[in-house]
Length: 146
Image 1 (spheres, rainbow, N blue to C red):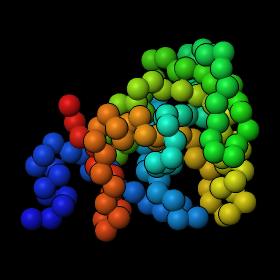
Image 2: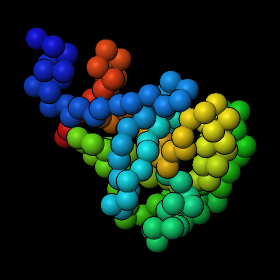
Image 3: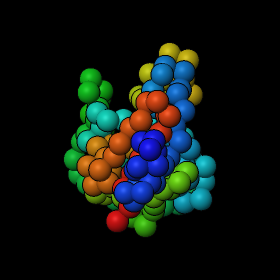
């Protein structure tokens, strides 16, 4: 039995992944019905979407009055997104909360290495809650339903 068959029999949903210009995994998704690129980031504590995209889509964003950011990155204001949901091809991630931040520093770093911009980052909050499995052999992310 293949790993894919085993995981699907155990209630996992398969999300196909692709590699960006620097070799990181990404997935196709949607936010409020708009197509987005989602970076799969096992080092990110939380799931974050682009603040500018959230505002462009008219989503409700509320400042949390605190700063956040990635390793080595600038500290940026963190917003909570209400009433929005990220969907990925094949599954719906369930983050602890959905946050929004300015992702221009992330996209500048990606662009400097020849990769295309992303509109969201899928973080460890989803991987923990849905017992994620990343299968490098099939370039797949598996998230458990329920």
